[in-house]
Image 1 (tube, rainbow, N blue to C red):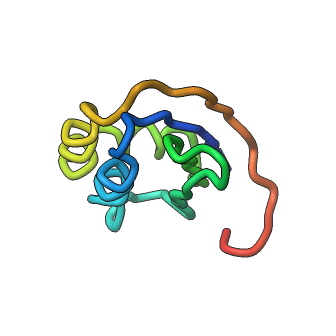
Image 2 (image 1 turned 120 degrees about the vertical axis):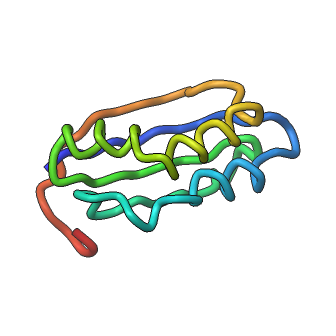
Length: 96
């Protein structure tokens, strides 16, 4: 398995807009076991994404899907930057 955990900083007042687009097109992503978008409890301009994939290749392939490409294009203007990004190897747990 392959996992990613990342924190995205967004423009002020754009967090809900960003979340809407991060969730758009995520229903049909082959190899995706878990894709969770969460707000930061302290930073109102931050969004966390936690992903679990069958493999790193499945993750890379997902970035080429038309629905994912459209979501990225729509959300781009609301993103300030990627503050943290971690690659992990999920071992097990609820939901995967």
